[in-house]
Figure 1 (cartoon, rainbow, N blue to C red):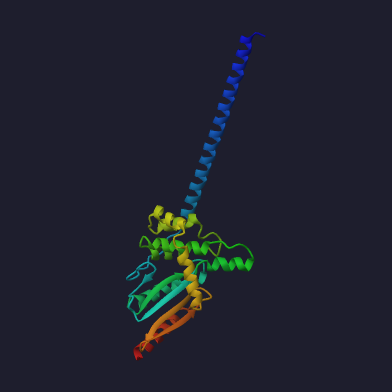
Figure 2: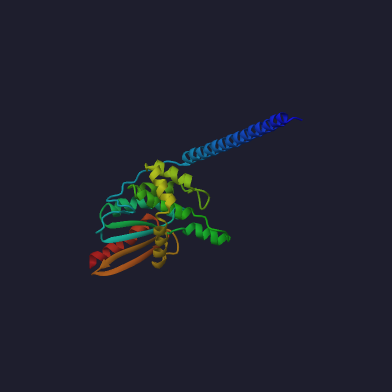
Length: 261
């Protein structure tokens, strides 16, 4: 075989290899595009499903609302609630007792009310009971509420979280559902997601739990009541959910004690 023929064959082989490489690269690029399209479609579908699963909730007017507090800071009674957005009794308080409590005690200047979390309380307790790694739905919801406070919508998010709790550690507060709740609460979703994903309020939620335990809280909801009688600081702890009538009786007794001094 002459040298010119060998050169022609080598060039043909090189050309075939280049074509094969180009085809392979095209297939890889096309595959990546298809995979990306599927992932985007899946994420968009999941996001639409999350939005569709979030229901509306009634608006509750809260006087002098400032982040996670409402009412007059100089009120004779200060109440700190330690709560968990996954806790069914906490949700019952929020839906049935809290609106009446706000109407008759906070709006009238008798109580200054602060809502705090218990960190990852419910998720940690479930994990301990079943001897499995803890999920993070409790603390994620707590952080979501504090992120909403950055936009002046803590209480809107607070109410939306309780309205959309599906149960304990069953997917109520995935990142998609938290984002959908935030959107329905009127938040800037991009700002909210940045805050939540950064873990900005994780330490605050963990401090909530530490402070709650230090105050004697071992279940949710719990209410730590602070007031003064003749200049002497006093504290009472109400553990658990009470009907409004009993809650009211306890507060009226404290107000009478303050008045008698």
